[in-house]
Image (cartoon, rainbow, N blue to C red; front, side):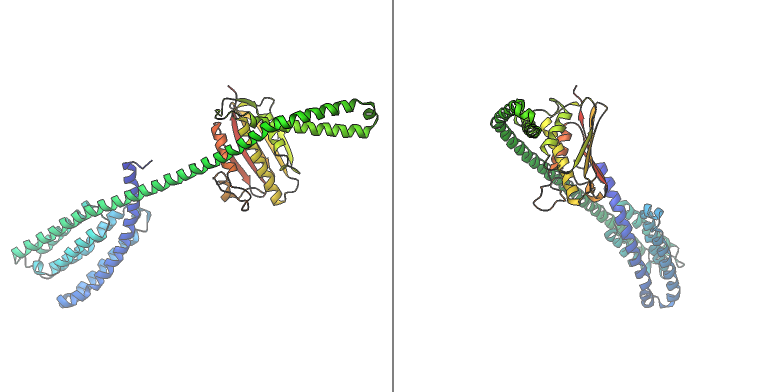
Length: 445
């Protein structure tokens, strides 16, 4: 959403203050150099007054320098326009004094007043009211210098002509400043619009990346579902036959009399039961309702946790996984998606600990109810996550793995899944010690 006009003006004034500060400092140094170089003009036009004029030029330069030094203070930065207006009047006052001290309206120095007015309008980012005030102040200074001249006004027509000419310069400079200021604001507004368009484009790219990740995840789920549906028919029946045969064999006298045979049959029975459990876990994906809302299906989180542990058993080999659960873990949502989140968290933790060579790798799952939401904490004792990466772990395609070992979409998709359930997935870590991921699920209404 674009910035409101009031907010845009506020941002513009803030940026303009910094620009005015820079221009005031640079312009002040330039004016000091020009004022001091004016001794050449004094030598050519008024050689008899050169000594006094040189002293006045030095004093004027010192005053401008002190004004510039004040711009380096906090108060000076806040009142940069007032200070700039003040020191800009110093050269005008100096030139007006020189006109008073020499020939009055006949002095050629009136041209310096006009040049300064135009320079202020063109070079300084002043407001048009400020430029007009500066021009009118110059008109007043010139009027006082000529009227107060010891000889008075000798040529009234020349005086009026030059006074009107200086006034025209003030008006012209103000008009130029007005359009210059409008153009500067228009440029700032275009920059602001471009910045917002870039921000929107970045958000669109991020959304597209998330959608791409979700589509990839849905394709994976669909493939698992198809595979699971086939396994239910192709594996479950032979497993049941094997279990029946093992049960019958265990009742045979020879098996009962032979401890070693009894042990072998027990191991075989446990193996078949494990296959049954895995097939049962895969049923979650096989019979998942496509397009079902994330908060309309009750399920036991404990059961989802068991399924995720069994399905990620290969990655968890050598890892001690402990858990702490309440008696009631009935929540509502998408069980298959939550299993996917847990598998992703377990796999990431196991891989990180394996890569870091963690001694006695451990994962502890803590589950507790708070405010009608089930809060889940998955913590490992692995290498931790660097602070600069902690804020980016949920960005699509961000990964610290080597090329070819992951797209960097797992945590991004997991974040979206938890968000669909009205919760938040966030990470905590202490580098070199531990990492924890936390999320919450709604209680069944």
